[in-house]
Structure formats: structure tokens, C-alpha cells
Image 1: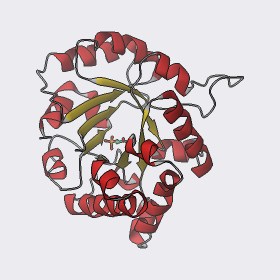
Image 2: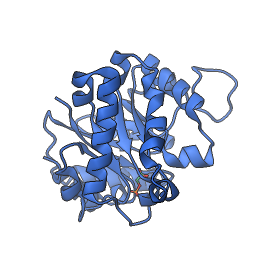
Image 3: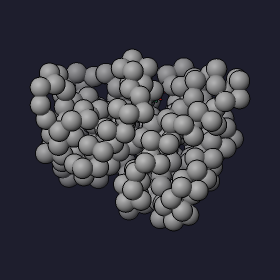
Image 4: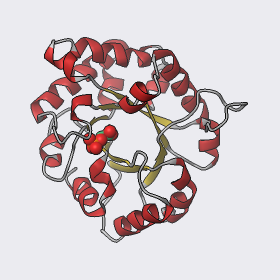
Length: 251
Ligand code: PGA
């Protein structure tokens, strides 16, 4: 059975003190996390070690926002999947639209990053999503298929360890959420592509998250869709109250 997941992507926000305070506030919220649910925080690298210690007694897991494709070497300023694994980081984001845009990460680089994570035993959350122009000119399904095809080169065992997050770029940080019908339609399409390539069992076991202006008001409706298995939350994950409320919207 696939898990429901609520993940908080802090992006480049919060200094070390603010990050600690946010997690301490979250821990006071009495969040119920059973076996069917994962809650994961994706802070920046500077927080990883501190928050892993802070969350030792908690069910909340920690992920990284990025990894370098290589294992080690002369890559100043970079962090490898092996380094993340040595901290017991459980998850890592790959293919977020901000990195595709600002860091020009393409199919080839993303494929190598995924391989590095699989090799290190870290589960990727592979993000994809169309720009507004694709949705307006009707090419959004084709674009999503192209982006998902990075996974088509991977083995069944690797795909089984991958979470997919559909994040329409026009909905990220804009306050403009995809309707629950739009989210369901695209999630069902992604699941059908996984089924064609990897079979029914893997398709049914893969958690598909929605991201893009998900907030306490719309989370329940989005999460109630058949193929929406949770959310990747940006802005609203920076507020303990809102994030706890979004977690409670999953059942
Ligand atoms: P948002 O970001 O919730 O602030 O729209 C989502 C994301 O980029 O993962």
C-alpha cells in the first residue's frame, strides 16, 4: 500500500535559530503520524544535522533539497548523496522547477542525481510540472510525460523507492492552486504512465504528491482525490500552525 506523505520544502528560508524554533513549535502540536503516513521536512543543508538530532524521538523525517551527481571530488560548494546518507538523511528532492529554471538542470543531470541517491540509499522525491504556457496551449500532458521519462530508464526496484511530486509551475508560490479536478486528472495520467512502463503493482504503490500553493484551506479537498497521496508544501510549511493543519488534513 502506498503511503500518504506531507512534505515541507523550506527552500532558502530560515536561519538556524528560526529553523529550530519552527521544529520545536511543530513538536508541540500533537501531530499524529501512523504507519500509513510520512511527514518529511526539507530544510536547507545548514539545518540537517541539528534537526536530525532534534527529531530523534519524533516520527518526522528529514530530507535534503539537493545533491550533486558525483560521489566526491573537486566540486566546491556541493554536497553529495553519500555525504547526506552519512547524516541519515532519508529523502532528497530532485527536479524541482526552481532548480530546473535557475540551475538549468536537464534530463541528463537529473538522471545522474537520481542514480547517486539510489546508490546512497536515499529516496528521491522527483518533482515535475508544466509552465502556464504548456497548459494554455494544451501540451501539458506531453511535457509531463517527457519529464517523467527520466524514471523510465530506472529499474523497478529504483522506481519503487521513488516518490513523484506534480507541481504545476504556475501554481508554485503564486497563491493560484490547481483545482482538485486538475490535480486528479494529472495524477491519474502519471499513474497510468507508470503502469504502462512498470506494471500495475508499482504504479499503485507509488505515492504521488501535489505541490503548488497548497494551504490549510485547500489541502483536504486536494488530498481527498483518489490519486493525490499528499502534498509538497512550500510557503505554508514555514508556519507551524498551517503545516500541522495540513498534516491533519491527510487521512
Ligand atoms: P508553494 O511551493 O507551496 O509555496 O507554492 C511548493 C513547492 O515549490 O514545493
